[in-house]
Length: 482
Image 1 (tube, rainbow, N blue to C red):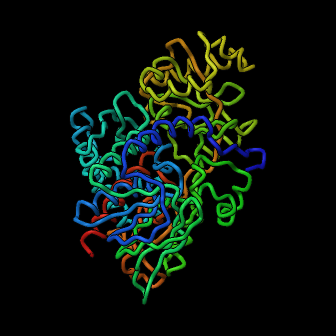
Image 2 (cartoon, helix red, strand yellow):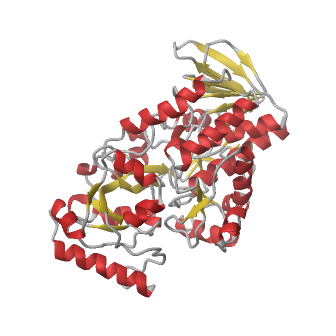
């Protein structure tokens, strides 16, 4: 991994779009407001307003507790806003309606295999057994999860997303935000948690500051840490994996590991901190992540010689490493009009000018300064594998469609830091543990701030499952323990 692979991490256009989408909606409801610096008292305080934090807040509120959510960024959503692929779950009502046969056992096996068996089996059991219920819960809140596709490392189609394959993250944030506001949950933006308070080993609240740097205290009987990972903290990333020095990130700028640091200060233990995942399909020029669902719907990866070089549905670490071995340390994601029509998220990539397109493969090869005969042979060979049902080059198991419908498209992609699998050690109720393996009374955590669930590599689609399943658990546990 070389310094030349540095990717620009600030997704300017993406953030502007999401700010307009989420930020404006937030201004319509009085429950979402900027922190005022006044001391507060509540039952539960949630640090972070991504999918895990909002799910936790809703469940704690439904358990009859008063809840305050603090968010250091100007808009809510965190990295959940950037999720596009889907939410993995097996044996769901949506799969049944689509005639998809799947099982919790298969989801469990795929997750453990994808994580190189480094995962905590008990946490993976909870993740996979409660995933289908998480889907139903979201649907009951108003979510559209009626499209199901396949992400890398999955043996079945189990990644749930909105109709037509639209981006799932912004949709879920909006649904969860509206549900939180309907319940009167107070959400304070531009409010940074500075310290978790404890007396005699029992959590008593937090110290926070508002946008004017005025500090204040929120007294609470429980604190739920849902601050996300540390993928945007380059110093912290390279502390645990020096090989990632110089890499860009797909994370939003607030993913700096604050929740980990604050929790360690009150005795929390950590697990799997060296396990940091790169995502293989990130646009080098601007750090924009291309959803794995494009490959799941049939796209292939080619190098500058116009040849495939990897099973496109291998785990993210394998595809990233294979890409770095190619000339230029990037590759081209190749797809046709049929794949574009199957996944509405692609329309956004085209609008943003991320694609190179042509009416024929020969014209596309010319635009890429690539040998047309080689590229033609690659596509024809792959299409023959689709027809025969066997990828004789790389053993790709799922090839849903041939690449033969004009137009043809490519997006140049390469790896960037994407997900930090390590974090706070938790039990199956979302309670944070100390170095002796004992529960820290009143401290809970959910989402990417935790470790142990994904092991050595996270499967695409399991992050949102993690956020919702363990976010709900943390909220339920805090609600029943008080």
